[in-house]
Length: 193
Image 1 (tube, rainbow, N blue to C red):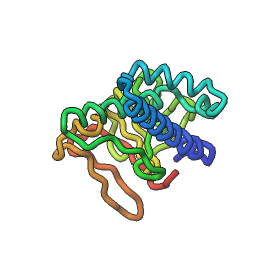
Image 2: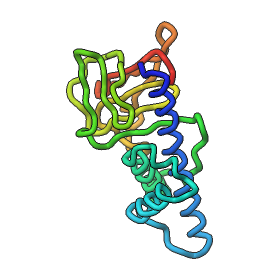
Image 3: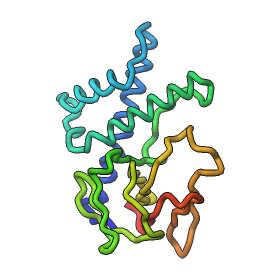
Image 4: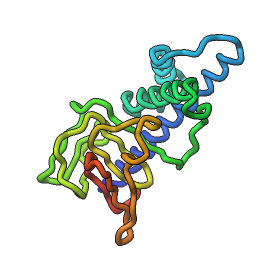
């Protein structure tokens, strides 16, 4: 269970990812209205560097860069799904509605199963409760705000997961437990951050 400062930082990191997604979406809409081409992922990453170094948003430097880049990948996927007619046009993200962030590099994550703690960049060591035995460290780790769920395992981005394979949430004794039919994800916690 995260300390108060870690929980505060988790909310800030999720908010930073939401801000990056929304700012990139606004930039793409603005470019479209002015008749310019849509920026690709590499172009958006250059914009992200400018935003992090800009005078208006110096607080973006306090958040890890990889989760912010993953938010840009999510936007790129949303556009791909829209143009392939698999989804509606991307929408701006609202605060508190599925706020999350993920670390794509497994080398950044350290998991101590016997001590029940996980190390996340810019957060430090966080205690957790195992709901299942973790088989391996993941390719991507996702932290979701409001449910305090740390998913360890290959994360399939939205729009690519078949409905039958989607993880489920269920209530048990006053807290939420994360259950995955494919047994890829392992952690859950009772407190919210």
